[in-house]
Length: 354
Ligand code: MRU
Image (cartoon, rainbow, N blue to C red; front, side, top):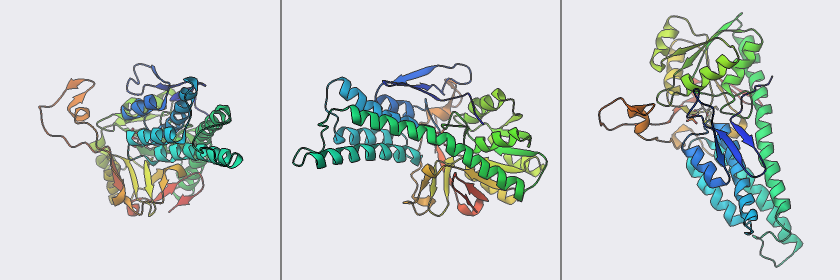
């Protein structure tokens, strides 16, 4: 199963990120030629969604090395460490970002260690042999992170679909989903939206209800756009309507993605996810999370320890640049944490956690 929609175009000397802020009305790309550009694009949400920002950051690490070599500067481990810091700080909650930059840094560290072993006494943080080998290793790693994500999406979707149709058999399902977890957010068919796509391919979708996802509207702008493109039946719903839809028995299951999964199975995801989980529990509706292993953070014991990003007040006070409220203090947490006790199952590429 493939999707023609991608959030990224890659080349040896740049990446181009589809500007998700302009979707669905305009399809324009933002060009990034170094890690700093990528960090800015992540911060401004030109690119968003946990796996997508991880993939972009991996290319960002490579581009910083590429740019240094093009300017005849030495590629040092310090340079890449600093780049990692800047990228990691762009958005704090989605752990895929730090995971991907660490994977890239490890490739560089292994390369420098090999160099140092070959020439004892030389400064191990400098590339002696010429940067080409290192650049190639970094590019290949970024590509691997990117391509592997497509395979992970398929495996997760398969696990999710198998579980749903076995444990909750039904001819066709009405699924509620939140935020955007599709091709715009991943390297493949998506996490939660990947599972929904696979269900649709098997003729098992009656209706997908897409939450608008205030305040950034990833649901109305991006999820609806993706599903309509593939002619999957979709109905837009305002976030606060979820409980009533459940009460009216219009929802068979909730599928969401994740930005970080703690060791005990608590899940950080787009603001509003926790409320959905409480509602689903109250209505005895299964609540599913679909996320790759790169979203799991076993260093974090439980959800209380997850850093939750707060976004600018402007995102709440304005809609499409138009002010909709008087000057007032605003609270704008970008994510919330759903306790594992509210989650029926988490599907990753490797397994199903109940
Ligand atoms: O703020 P965003 O748009 O980056 O948030 C994205 C989400 O919360 C997604 O649901 C998440 O990344 C999970 S799967 C791609």
